[in-house]
Each structure stands twice: as C-alpha cells, then as structure tokens.
Amino acid sequence: MMKILSGRRAAVVGGAAAALALVVGASSEASAAVRYYAIAPGYSVNVRSGPSTNYSIIRVLPVGSYVPIFCQRPGETITGPYGTTNIWDNIANGEYVSDAYVNTGSDGYVAPRCS
Image (cartoon, rainbow, N blue to C red; front, side, top):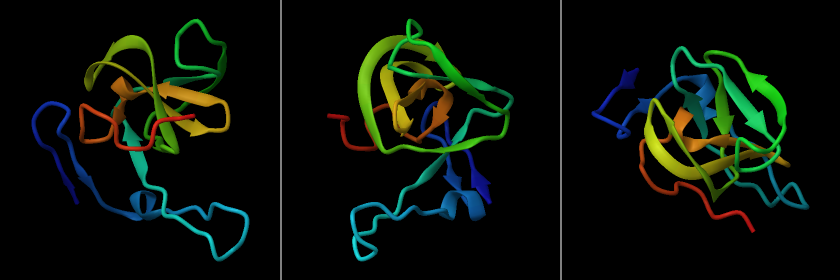
C-alpha cells in the first residue's frame, strides 16, 4: 500500500523493499534496522563519490530503485522532484545521491549526519 501526501511529505511505503534491514556493527549481536527509501518514480539517479555534481559518477540507479540512507550531509543545492535541498544521502561507503530525488517524507534530515 502506498499513501501519497502533498509535496515532500510523501509516503508510507509498504512491501518487501521497505522492510529490508541490514546488520551493522562488529558482532552479530549489534544490529540496526536500516530503512530503504524509494527513488522518485520515473527517474534514474546518478550516484556520486561525494555530495556534489562536481564529484564523479560511480554508477546510475535504475528507475524503481530503493536505497538505504546510512547518514546525510550538506553539499551542493539540487532541485529535483521532491524540491530543492542541499542534503545528500550516503547510500553506501563513498556513495551519495541528492535527497531531492529520494522519497524520505521529510524536507529535513532523516538519518544522522555523516562524520
């Protein structure tokens, strides 16, 4: 079930992709659920090595992708389907996408700031 709200206030995303979790930490006892967020419908998104279009493209996420957000940091201001923002989402070690293309349901930070 997907419920769409106005503006960036999108979505309770159901289904298996949203329910995925990763185990993090040094031991199997240390685990944390990582939420997956949908990329804007109809968009493929460049994954960059840093929080700006000046960084190199590492790969391209295909239409229909979901991404984890491990941490977020400020960077270049980007305008996308979910508004204008300078927040960049860290989706893997050394991999960033602009939050303007990620359906987080918020105009602000939804994960800790990257160190």
